[in-house]
Length: 420
RNA sequence: GGAGGGGUGGCAGAGCGGUUUAAUGCACUGGUCUUGAAAACCAGAGUCUCUGAAAAGUGACCGCAGGUUCGAAUCCUGUCCCCUCCGCCA
Image (tube, rainbow, N blue to C red; front, side, top):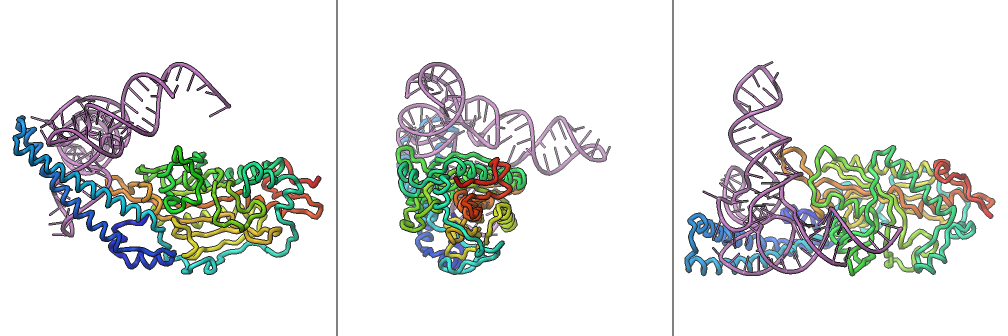
């Protein structure tokens, strides 16, 4: 959520920045609501002051109120009730509107309406040489990915991993978690996968992206589309001890996404599915410490790609391609030689104070000073099925077997998935 | 699921219709004292809103939402969460 005062004090600035994210800001709407709200609050406060004064007078004098006082106070009480209802509904309107406004892009982000203006900032390895097959063929040949079982159990865009495939996925995620915990200093967290509505609002997934989320209406619980949602709510409503910053969390969770906007696209294989495993990094940092943190997280994610012997590139997203809550994002894509495409395996973003404002997570820089909103960053490290795809398609040998990256052998217990 | 108990400031913990401006203790901040520190003593200190250039002041906040009342932390209703016991169950 962006700050109401800032929005009102420099409306054109925000309007222009939000336009770059394809959002039309209605400044007058917010401004008028806010002015009305202030007017009513002033009115209500002075009536309450009168009521408090008279009540205290009666109490201090230990007497019964007079008839005149009672009738005056009843009148005042009714007025207060009416005005407060108006204030309340104005505040709901203001908040509801603010919740639909995306985060503003960082100055540093290239302008552009869509992905064509994204910039490749780094590339590692050669993407063209390797001969391979698409992973759905490999997976079915080796009987490690069962698409039809997934479809028969749960429908399209679900899959079943079996045997070596399951073990390989478990190895990859365990290896990643260990690196984040032991090498990078993250604290491992296992959050709930079902979260409350407020938690979804806090991360920015609600109210705007309801159609992407699985939802149990009876309990009003929502399946997380990423661990970011849960990790972002970890300090909801708290004032964090500044000595604890930066906070670095990592989680391995499933991610649940409806993905029905992309019907017909990417239907083959396990590239775009309704449920997938992901390791997620999340940080809380002091304001303006996000630049360095973002660089570090890119480094941490690409390190994993490198260790997995994958070809990768880092893409800086332009304003129009940024996510709702993001102020600046880098995507990391690995080359899948069988599918012959770049796969997004990580998206690393700084959300500045956008999310902490939404769920009222604060910290106090110094004893006695005012509270501030820390910045949050999130990033995959990494998304499992696509990494699995890349490993299978890169590791395919001429005899149909798969050689897995050396770093994983400790976790799998074997070096190859043999063709039968 | 059944029965009972409870949610009060950073923490502990009183208050159960009007001297609550939320006691008291711990922790915290400033000061006095001291060579320095500790102890002691004095003072201060929360979050948010509105008015205001500021100083300052108004108002709201005792899990949350309603209600009763001239007046609610205190009474009533609903709701959420926590604890104990029983039942059920990975």
